[in-house]
Length: 195
Image (cartoon, rainbow, N blue to C red; front, side, top):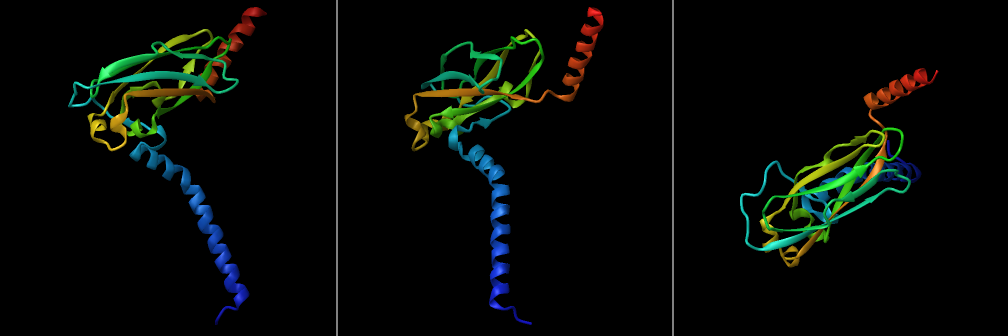
């Protein structure tokens, strides 16, 4: 039984809609994977240990901090810039402070500029790998351990990089369930003490 032209058109349109929907659904994870593999958009690499090779050539790494609008924390780098040899493991600290009277959870997103250096900037350990919860009035120093991959000096575009900027932006997330319960328990203890 052959389909008439209207039925064929409907089937094709449904196919196009389903294909576009599948591509839209897969675009975010595919783009994330692409950025991690290529360093596109300033995405960094991740390693479990430092580089095996350290060059005599140096590179400057600058640190930048920002936060989402209305996010109540104070957030800043404790040093603005370091200079280290390419391949050498560096350590930098950021400071976060919760000036409010309630616990607040945050997560940091990051990028590296210039973009072509992103794939060569390698993090070993970073506060951005997990969510952070600060109690009322709590101030913490958060480390990031990193190195610049020696292969940067042979890359067609990245070899001209003399300064890399590592930027973090903190944004608020929902408190983990156990933190919410602890805050509720603390609030009910305070209410009982007031009565």
